[in-house]
Image 1: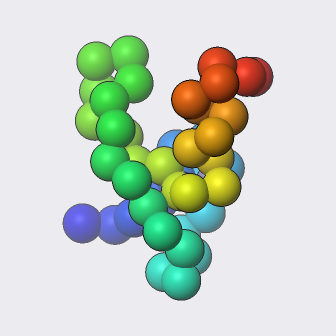
Image 2 (image 1 turned 30 degrees about the horizontal axis):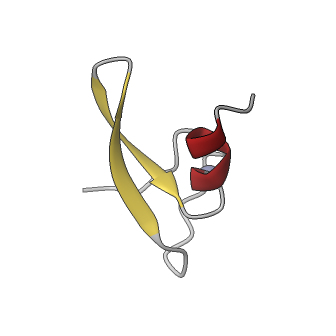
Length: 42
Ligand SMILES: [Zn+2]
């Protein structure tokens, strides 16, 4: 499975990734983008 952040598009293998669900779809986000998702910022 390719790890690619759906927010910033990074595929950096040295970064921590999280699986999540967004708009009913399974997504992968990196640790850098996770805080903004938690706080609902856009
Ligand atoms: Zn990201």
